Length: 97
Image 1 (tube, rainbow, N blue to C red):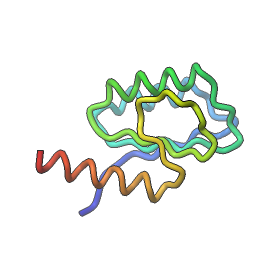
Image 2 (spheres, rainbow, N blue to C red; image 1 turned 120 degrees about the horizontal axis):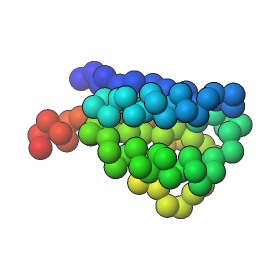
Image 3 (cartoon, one colour; image 1 turned 90 degrees about the vertical axis):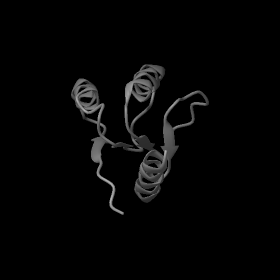
Image 4 (cartoon, helix red, strand yellow; image 1 turned 180 degrees about the vertical axis):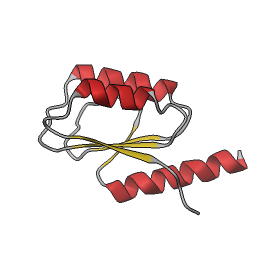
């Protein structure tokens, strides 16, 4: 089974507003957001990601190995492969329902 998803990278010099726009325009898509390890993830970013995950109608997985906030409502994994696996599992769960 193949899973369709959109992959977005958040790198050090990426404009956060562009990422927010991409996320907001893809509420009906499975989405993987990969956060570069060089980015310092502050409360503002966590709050936005929590807000997005509540609005999203599909899977939303964040890939980061240095995110250590205890309170978040999105799925957090350390590798891209794990993100793909989560999306596939959630797609199967939606199918059987």
